[in-house]
Image (cartoon, rainbow, N blue to C red):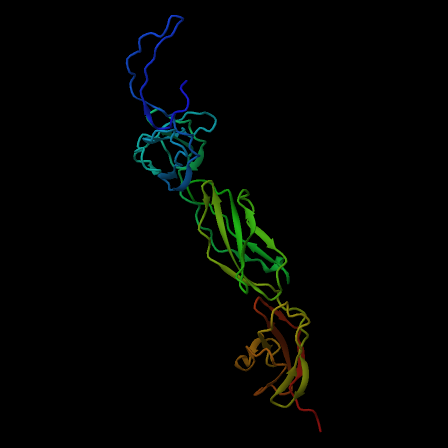
Length: 346
């Protein structure tokens, strides 16, 4: 072995034999020999993207050409059987471009929905490097975008939201799971609150530790072997419950044609501001359905606690009333108050 040579330089050599008598005749000059070895082993290819009929990967260049320029690269792919190492070259690859798309039309052995391993090697004038590690890629489109999630208020609280979404059942390959993302609208902070990318059966999550009365936005993504889908449309929700325990209205006064009632706020607003009240009455006809009265005077006025119902005609008859209170997520209904339409005697 000749040591001390400069990598990449070209050398020629002559040799002679020496014994006790002396040195023999020099040999003819050798052919030109480059002081080089094969390139170093490339890193594993990187998955870029895929469709139902194509796979794009990015090769890693050899970190050391071994002293002789790399002339080309080779892509090897298996036959989709992960239990055997049946790797053969991708014949459509031009050997020069580090990013390459394998098209099903040019390589019919690749089928939609199958998972393949890809490796690469670098070649110079000395020979071929060791083959890289593998990257696994499915010939499949990215996972389909899910529908927007929803909130189940019956399983939520004043500090939590129970978020649900529908399964994605379409696509070239199976969905392996889902991720739930949350944005706190006041701060803009975004985080993955649930990563179920390996559990496709879970389609709901209780997000806890939220601030009562605050607004949050949620979107969900589906995941398959190749990665994550586009995010679903956003769903915005406020953290609160429906108001509850609304007392029935109180009698204030009456005339032959009017009745005045008052009320108090519900025991609990549910954690969100009261937005509106509504009054319902049978208008003195006991068999009649209750209808909302004076909506334009009462709706969207959460500060009201007193109202007079005028132009009543069933003098001497009992009128029944109940209240409804609303916040952003729902409503509560009071019990019924019965009042006779009549003036108080002198």
